[in-house]
Image (cartoon, rainbow, N blue to C red):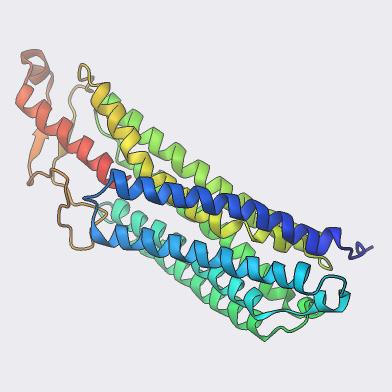
Length: 329
């Protein structure tokens, strides 16, 4: 039996979601400030992407506040007004969708940079899946803009299911692909491998949070389609995406400081052979931006090299894998 719509599970749920969303927006602003302060020499595309995301987050919060002000203050005591889909709510849906698909696209770019050295097919497939997410997002926006009454949300049932199912699936695919290629990027250095596992942990945590929120929204709508609990949860979704991406960028400083302060003996697997050509995966044209890179070189460490302490090869190899991790974060 469908749950009866009340102020608690309609406008009350939306208000709680807005309150949590405002908190996440504040955290995102702090993270953006830390990013610009700690990474002044990062490549320009990344700086622009962070600026666009934080601007979208602020606009998303502003339109959401306007919509809730309309329902709670302007039309206080007017239950009929609660059924109206105001223009600012439609804009909230637009910015919500753009933020989600934009962050997913930035993650897909990272998958491409990580994986195109191994195989171009699977990273390209991830890109096509994310492009499909853009298509679903545009469809969701088009349907939301046509709505004028919350009582007609049932006509968007299939679109709502498709939107949140796609978001959950894309998050899982991106997290799986990034962890797979990070795992394939392991080096003979045990310390470097520890940093790779640390990056994988960040990827899994951020992917779990965003996919769990999308899945919670989907379950809420499936079980309670005639109230607005799912909208309250959905208010959190874009800010979770933005914060997860900013946290990934800011984690570079933490991991680099740990690496610099924790430098010790080189624990290397005997008989390893690997290349030291490096392309910056944050750069579209492969140029270095404030990070030290090395030309192509092949380093082979045999048991004899290790016994003789071939420091030249070790230093080249160590610096290559450290720069690889720094650029991939």
